[in-house]
Length: 168
Image 1 (cartoon, one colour):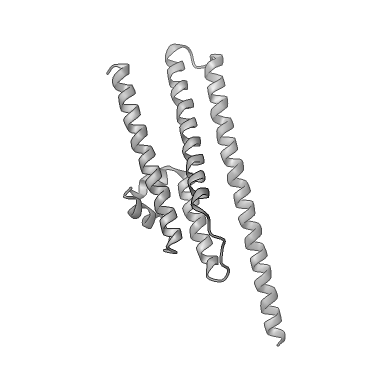
Image 2 (cartoon, rainbow, N blue to C red):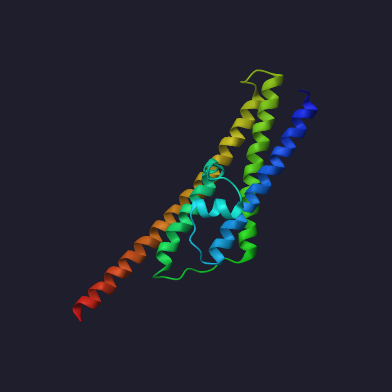
């Protein structure tokens, strides 16, 4: 195949991937807004994607699992609703990070074809990929720590309420 054919395939594949990601994010938002049960299967059904598609993206799987856990606590404590603007901004951040990673990967593939794997340009691209992954993992860690703190506070609050109930 020629480079133009590869380019056309890459563009079509990227567009299809973006559309599926947008549908998936919209499905998550719709299920959350309608207070329906959020599971990987329900999101996949709503977004018209396969379950395996969602599992290919750890950030989507993680987000769905977090929302599912959050729904468990919603029975006792109401969570603040997220505005549409925030949802779209989050969708764009995820999309941007994926696109940046994909661009870096494609640049790395092109550079490897032109020269050896240890040239400075290839190393710069790999460094960019690692920095992007580091940023994503740092954000994920902060979110997990925040969720853990909230869960601990909730458990302590429930423990105190149980102690007060037992005293009466």
